Image 1 (cartoon, rainbow, N blue to C red):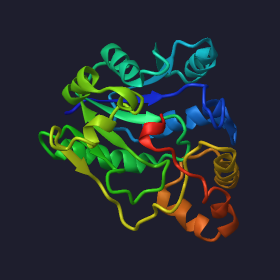
Image 2 (cartoon, rainbow, N blue to C red; image 1 turned 120 degrees about the vertical axis):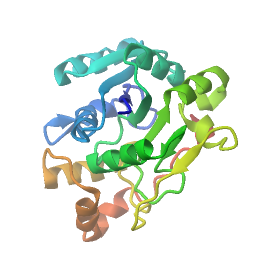
Image 3 (cartoon, one colour; image 1 turned 30 degrees about the horizontal axis):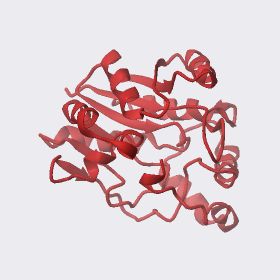
Length: 243
């Protein structure tokens, strides 16, 4: 069986919403929700949070201790190097990459993407965001250990911040597979990057409580909440080069 190691990148610094990874949502931190979703997928052989060596990220280390999840510290800007360091300390066959600003992550989607990755021999990379049908904040990606180490050797500039971006922007080099899930819900924004995002995510957490909510159930509820959906509908996602 393929050993997939989950790595969650998390740090307190954020230009638009500082400290977002430790914001409380229905009694659990944003990071705590991401860690729980990863664990509930039951597809990971190991799980580690990759944070930076910056003093401000001591708070992330403390939260990891409370969550009983492993923590690795590495460079603040070279996130790819941070990932490789975390993977060296927690080795496996592949890495499932998560970001700590996705508190509404659906464990079932993690499970599905892991199943796809394990079912297709020779894949370097699989992701739900190549042809996006999922809301931002629900994406799952898995990269083979050899591909990750190749990226570490050859990737430059913003590709070292986004960890896997060199792989999916160079499909002539890497064997890349996109997973799309119907129906198309890409108009929803369920990630956490701004105060508008926080208002929506907090409303979701207040309604459903401290549980992981399946995307279909969440989307059905939001369909009847136009005012909520409008809160962050105009938030612009940063381009890759704006790392």
